Figure: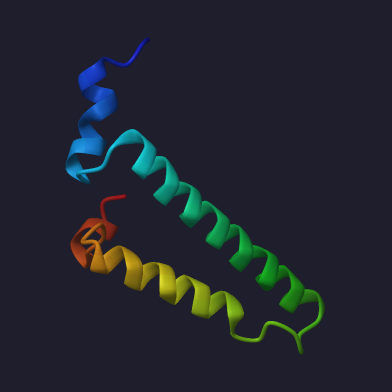
Amino acid sequence: MTPSPNYFNAHLREVDESYGRHFLHAGYYFVMLLAAAICALTHAILPFLCEKTSSQIILKLYNKMTARKLFDAQSSSHG
């Protein structure tokens, strides 16, 4: 089944972004979450390293999303 153009663009309209801008934002979140995962794994193996790094990255991402109004407490229970 091929998604219709309206389906493809619906989210982009919701967040008021072009495809390129959305790709860059999503890529940023991907890289930061990957960094948090690597730090968490490093901490699991060597507990004296990256003690708070993953938490700080996640908090930074959360603050960035709430500032852009992409996340709220009500929508988190639906996804």
